[in-house]
Structure formats: structure tokens, C-alpha cells
Length: 146
Image (cartoon, rainbow, N blue to C red):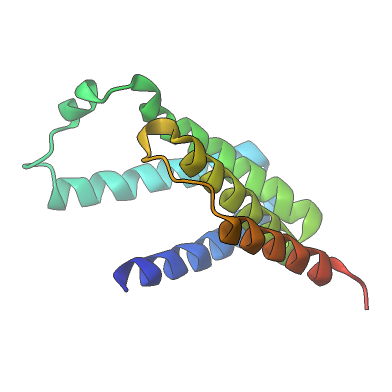
């Protein structure tokens, strides 16, 4: 149950953040906004780490992470912020989020199917493919003009 709640909160926060970032970008610039977002996220993470985990998990533990490409999450995060801003600016929040979630669903399913990045490989499931198809159909229906 806690995973469901966390996922719902995450999705909600991502949508709100995307709208906020898009509005800030209209008043500044995409990379200024992205820099501010990433910097403030860094400060919050650093503070929480200092308070909660610094004694148990030193920063030096990052040196033992294998494979090294797993440490590119921050770089990916910068491009996520950029592409969310670009998508919401041109498509609006609802359409952009639907396509973002669709892309997340497809990417996550292929990562599971192929067992990429250390994830346990999952077998092909027609129900998951059908669910993805229904999700895509929902996007098309949502996008239709009535």
C-alpha cells in the first residue's frame, strides 16, 4: 500500500513541478530554470542526507557503485526537467503528462522484458501489452476534439 501511495504522490508532484517549471521558464529561460531546479533539489537532498543518513552512508560509498553508468541519474534528471518543460510548453500539462506517462510505461516494460540495468527479467505478458494498448487508446480518445 505504501508503494501505491508513494507512486500517486510522485505522479502528482511531477505534474505540479512541471507546471511550476514551465511557468518559471516563461519568465526566465529553460536552462536557468533547470539550473535552479537541480540546485535547489541538491540542497534539499544534501540537507536530508546530513540529517538522516550521513553517519550510516558516507558520500564515498558512491565510489563503489558498479556499473558506473548508474551514477548518471543526475544528468538524466537535468534532461527530464528540460523535456518536461518543453512538452508542457507546447502541448499543455494534461497532454504532456499523458505522453510522459505512456513513454515511462513503455520504457519500464521493455526494461523488465529485457532485464536491463540489473532489473530482474520478466516474461512477456499479453495482459500488460493489452493494458498498454488501452492506455494508448485512452490518450487518443483524450486528444480527440469533441
